[in-house]
Amino acid sequence: MTPTSRGGSGRRNIATLICGALAAGGLAAAGVTALEPGAASASSHREAPLISGTPQFDNTDLYAFVSPDKPDTTTIVANWIPLQEPAGGPNFYTFAEDAQYDIRIDQDGDAQEDLIFRYTFKTKTKNDKSFLYNTGTVESLDDETLNITQTYDIELIKLKNRRAVSKTQLADDVRVAPSNVGKASMPDYKKLRDEAVYETASGVTTFAGQADDPFFLDLRVFDLLYGGDLSEVGRDTLKQYNVNSIALQVPSEAITESHEQPIVGVWSTTQRKGADGEFRQVSRLGMPLVNEVVNPIKDKDTFNASSPVDDAQFLKNVTEPELPKLIEAIYKIPAPDEPRNDLVDVFLKGVEGLNQPPHVTPSEMLRLNTSIEPTKKPKRLGVLDGDNQGFPNGRRLTDDVIDIALQVVEGELLGAKNDLGDAVDKNDKKFGHSFPYVGLPTAGSRGKTVEGNTTDNVRSALDGGVTAAGSGTDTTLIASSAAAGAGGVLIIGTGLFWWRRRQNDRAYY
Image (cartoon, rainbow, N blue to C red; front, side):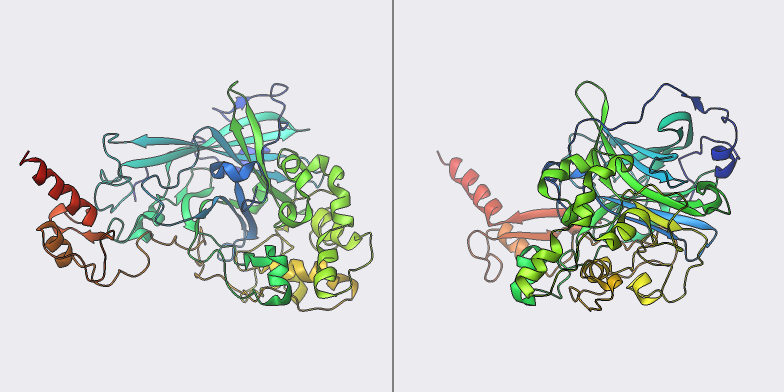
């Protein structure tokens, strides 16, 4: 492809940008911007009260792992906009323009971000007189038939004591992969996704766009912990739902403190622009499930507006967790003794000798040891099953974090061996072997055609003939129209037939 975007940093690599003096074109900002959160709003699949009403700003999951095909790089995948119904048009799923989508890196374990990769998005509508997301078959990202498009910029911010000391534009006007409207509209969606993968001049590879939701689990856990009798397990609740993904692949040496200290902490945030023009943090995500099942309702919105350096206020939620007590009440499995210092190690410090940085400040984030080589055969239970490249050492797309978390919460690390899980052990779609690794999104045209809904039946209805077999008087028919051109979609049915007949009746009055 010939990319329309351009790296803003010349030919310098990302390590030079981070470690060297301010680059030409970088913006000195020392002592100017205090990167502190503002008022609360909220993160993860609808888990906090305020964010559930604004999905464009809602972090769903975060992944960080050593790239399996490029072990000298680290890949970070951050997802937003949960529970996307693939056919949810005509207003499909776009990143917000009044938001900053951040990936934050702690290089030294002090619970403060040293690097921020900031994504901001712009939207363009080619024809605002149409209600359509696309007006015909889309064969490339610059196709005129793709009516609504997005691009984004990436800014690298270097910080000291949580204040910006430099800002450098890594890329601008990078194209976003669109929502997968359907097979008629986008017959080769993989081609569109591949076009959206872009390598900047500084050695960073990036992607933004729709993807299959990689989180696999049975969400019926909220129905009295799988029905109260484990009758509600084994169904991937997020099957065939999509998310919006931002994926970033960076040379590991560019984000680590040194070869001697290869452990980084990673979390993602969203800042939303307020009426006063100021950006305020409304969503935060690091380790999976923390704000969903560790923090109580009273703390969820506060957590999403806070930063890891202030996580001491939530310590009791980890050392005296609610979930084991619920499991004991429902399933009579004894809860481990408190305080749960084993959970502090997993969720707030990292495993000693594996991914715990020296002089660590306890705080919630994903911690990844970038020096551990990827395994050729990842084990879904990660470190619990002897695979030290897996969760909680970062998080890979294939890691079964529900089963891992349940087993750890029930005392696996304290000698209480158990095999608890939700009976969903893998994603419904396969992951890729190369960047951005996430699965292709489910198309809006998935599912079966209603019996009898054929083009011939539709044309008969328009001509005043019979409706589709078994359709009834209120059935809407949807069919491809060859006359509308490739990818054109004609929405018709008995409602339209009724309207035409009404117009003919009026002609007699």
